[in-house]
Structures are given as structure tokens and as C-alpha cells.
Amino acid sequence: MDDRLIVIFGAGKIGRSFIGQVFGMEGYRVIFIDTDAALVNELNRRGEYPVVIKGPHRKQKIIIKNAAAIHSGDTDRVTEVVRDAGIMAVSVGKNALPLVAPVVAAGLVQREASSPGRTLDIILAENMRDAAPFFRERLKEHLPESYPLDSLVGLVETSIGKMVPIMSAADMAKDPLQVFAEPYNTLILDRKGFRGKIPPIGAFALKDNMKAWVDRKAFIHNLGHASAAYCGHLKFPGAVYMYEVLADPGVYEFTRSVMQESARVLLEIHPGEFTGESLEAHIEDLLERFRNRSLGDTVFRVGCDLGRKLGRDDRFMGIIRLAQQADKPFDQILDAMSMGFCFRGVDENGRMYPADEEFHREWEKDQEGVLERVCGLNPSGDSLLVNRIMDQYNALKQD
Image (cartoon, rainbow, N blue to C red; front, side, top):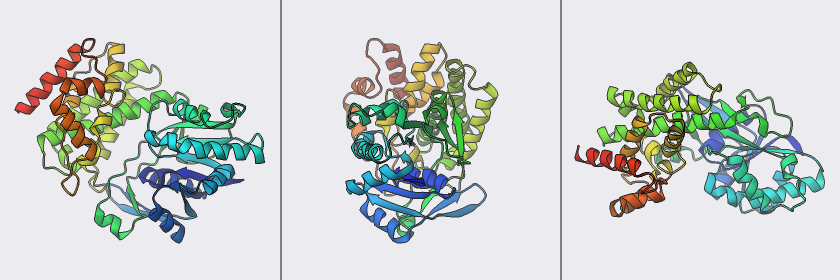
């Protein structure tokens, strides 16, 4: 066992630029588990990787040392490091969590056999609601019934607020291990999720009502970011960067109004957790971060993946449902969502996100069907919402 070893499933942008950086800078040994053989080999060859921090006024390169990687296909070695880890993190996306669960479960069984009663905390760096119960169920599918999962394994939900842009092919060619990120480095975690001793990590911000903070991320940060991308793309179809569209006062003020409308809902849904002043300050801070020219975040990245971002539980429909429960207005939010159906942003090669191409094909064929299947809008029970979205969408198309 190695208390100063963190095992991170997923050597992607958040895995390297956020979780790996936070623990690596505190002197932890970092081992990534990933499917990318070339990335795994390069990490092992060099034993370190660079994180380029792109602030609004200066750039800084940080080298994360004592780093290594294991290919996810090498299940024996993966099982061994799960057995020996001091702490673990998962940053693979919701759809890949079920694929991670079997080898994690195998490692937990070996861990209990070699060190009975030793806990393992797993940081779920996934930005999803109810990540802990979701992953708990996936683990239970692969663990013996007698395994004391709830007492031995801490499933620690997070709110991942760090923005990491898509890197260009040219930047990747310079160094396949480097990753760009903004300076923000606060890791919001569920204090109640831990089962072992909470490590004294400077970047940790521990919360007791984690649901409120996950909602704040989804329904202010994610909502506002996507709203700016959709409004900005509609007004400036050729714009590439977020700072370009947010330089327009109309796009800027509309984005702020959407976030403020959502904040009023959160104040009602989570009484006592936030103040109006704290959420207003958060909104202003986010708007400044969204406009970080040095970061080079693109309208394409922020707006793409429509099937997820317009989905029934995501940033738009999630807060609309909460607004309905709280009997609060959501007109600006609905307008921003309607703009999303017009989004056709492209990457540096002029290509749309592949899933968005399919989304638009389905949308052109069966708009009410998409609203039902993707957005969770019942044609009869949600007829007013459906009509408002379609009226707004048709008006936007005519403009």
C-alpha cells in the first residue's frame, strides 16, 4: 500500500490538467489508466508531463513529475494498483463508468484480501448529478454480496469547474503530453463521501450539501457557457473563439440574464446554501473566465454535443424542471435552449461534431420526436413548452 499514490482512470484533459496536477503538486505519485497506448507509452518514457496554465495576463508551464501510466487492457496491473492505491479518481465520462467498474471491483476484492478493513476513497471527477449512486450500482454488479462496499469505499462526488480547451493539431504535434488549462484550480468535493482520512490538499473545497454545488456548476457555469456559445454562434456564425462572441454587448448581457434567471431558481431550490450576492459574484467571475483570450476556448467546444447538452437532465432541461417545481420564470433559459437547435459550429477542420450531424438529421425529420426522445418533453403534458421552443426556433430561423 502507498498512501502517496493516486490512481486516475482517464488521462484526458481533466485527468491530467486538474486531478493529476492537484495531487502531483502535493507530492503524490500519479498513475493514469487509459486506453490510448501511445499516450501511455510516452508518459512512461518521460515520467512527467507539462500543464500550460493560460491566464488572462500570463502563461505558466507546470511540470507534473512522478507520473506513469498503465494501459486499461492490462487488467492484472490495473487491479494491482487499485489494490495498492492511497486514493483513486475516475475521469472517463458517464458512459465509460460501467467499463471501469469490473477492474475496480477486482482491485477492491484483492485489497480487502491483503489488507482487511482498509478503505479506499474514489474521487468521481465526472460533473454528473448522482454520480456516487450510479457508480455504486455498477460496482455492486461485480462485487461479492458479502463485500462491505458502503463502509470500505468512499464515492466522492465533485463539481469540476476548470475549463480546458480543445488543443489544435499543431499544439498536439509539438508535445502529445501537454495540456492547456485556465488558472482556476479549486476542486469542490463532497465531504460526506469520504470513508478514510481526507488528505490535506490545498485545492480541496469540501462541501456538505454536494447536490447544491453540482447544481451550481450545471445550471450556472455549464448553462451560461452553452448559452453564450449558442447566442454567439447565431449572431456571429463565423466566430471561432468564446472571447470573440462575448465581446458583443448583446451576447454578453443575454448570457448574464440567463445565468441570473437560473440563480434565482437555485436560491429557491437550495435555501440557505447560497446567497444572492455570492451567486452574483460567481456569475461575474465566470463571465470574466469565459472571456479569457489566452485560453483560446472555442465556440465549437462549448456548444457541441447537442444530444447531451439539450438532454432531459442537462443544463437547460434540468433547470427548467427545477424552475417549474419552484414556480419561477425560465423565459431566458428557454430562449437560450431554443438557440441550441440552430447551433452548427465546426472544428478547426471545418467539421461538425459527428453526433451533432446525426442530431440535425433527426431534427429535420422529426422535431417533436427529438424534443420527446432527447429533451424529455412529453407532447401532451409539456405542450406549452414544446410550442414555445418551436415558435422561438422558427422565429430564429427566419431571422
